[in-house]
Image (tube, rainbow, N blue to C red; front, side, top):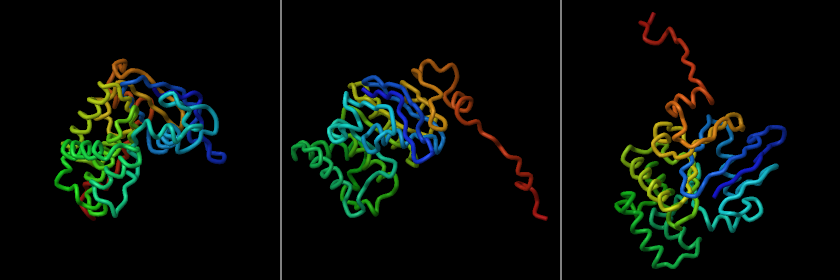
Length: 247
């Protein structure tokens, strides 16, 4: 469902993504891991047709993401890093607008909107403008927009960041449900505990290059320890002044 071959993106002399090759099967939940600046968001932008590669190819749903970006966008749902909301639209209006953009019948859109608002506990805030929403409400609104068109592939950039435990559990359960029904999920995350719970495939990159790609079940140790070994080991500085009595 997702296939990259030597996918590369350069910005001048800087190489943000360097020769990535991997594939994700239908119905898989692939967690795409790496530190800040590793090239994760750039990769997602190439996979979703927002950014052309400097070289190599990215295919999603059998479509070349660079050559057919509009066709691709009709097949996928995206939760972007910046959420992509409009301050002057309400939660409900965002979902109705999404249905219009995808050309869905209004009755279908209203039915799906009602179900998503209920599933994500957004009913009480359906008439709240995005500018007045909490971060959690904004994240759930963007997540609902990604689900509404019933996409074949979901791309989610940090879906579990800065949301409460109940919302995280609801989102995780929904993603596992749609994956069982054949939807491919590709997500970035810094929350390794959540990634470990949900992933069926783990891909790790460092400085734009692949360092790991395997089924999650093949990890011989915890995802956190594997990440520390391959990607970025934590370094704790000895700050001798912390905890000391003021002089």
